Image 1 (cartoon, rainbow, N blue to C red):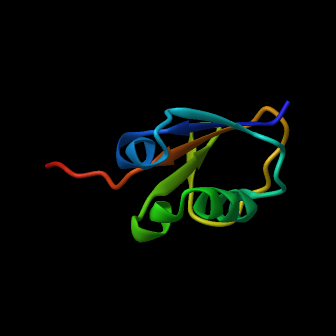
Image 2: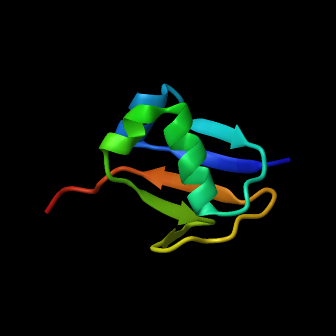
Image 3: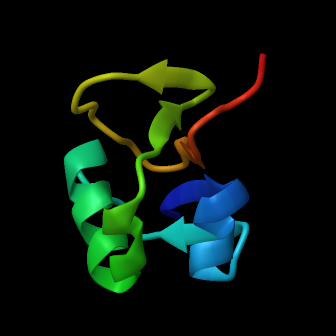
Length: 77
């Protein structure tokens, strides 16, 4: 039970992991606070959040067994 958090690129480098299992949190703001408290270096980078394969721009409710992806900035051309 909980939230599956997939970590990519620089975010995975900072955490030293590519997947986390987080007890259920209410929303993405709470998840951000938990991650930034646990891994303070995340505060210094920008990243996007996708919930169940959909990139979100605002606080989003989370439910048991949701999958959240923490995505580093994209670059390219």
